[in-house]
Image (tube, rainbow, N blue to C red; front, side):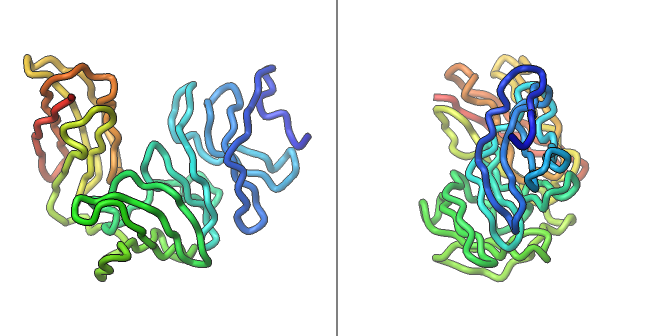
Length: 237
């Protein structure tokens, strides 16, 4: 045994075991943080939590781990994340090429490229690729159907905008934010004006709203930050 991760007597349930340049990444539950991202070099001392992504007892929903360009890529509740093994550099991938893409799946690394499937309203589900070179902050994403020249990081002075998809929805709805993603407040109210849910985010381009818990009906989603705001109607089928 390398390490008794859940030393309180429970099971750590290591999963998603993935090699990145000789270092192991995986998910595990230490009984305190829930299921989160861990790394190991094969010794107890260097088997440690990388980042407590979701700060509660239940942990994060991390899956589809893969190695590409010397970094770890994975999905966190449907959003694309990357990690170099440090807390500070374990973050959601911010790239304008991801705008309008949803249902990301099948992450696969090939050299310095990251390939994955994703859905868009324009093309449907297609193959996408990104430059996953570890020297860059984020991969430049482009669909195989159309490869525009894009900036790897969204400019902070872009116009603030947001879209919901799918809408109407039967389960989860994703909020896609474009432009300045700093200090974003998101709320959901019902048609009577009652606040149903509210949360704050920083530097998130995609947010999964808890719409699977809502009853059928019409709701109002409000998104605000320091540069703008938007109000949208959401239909739960």
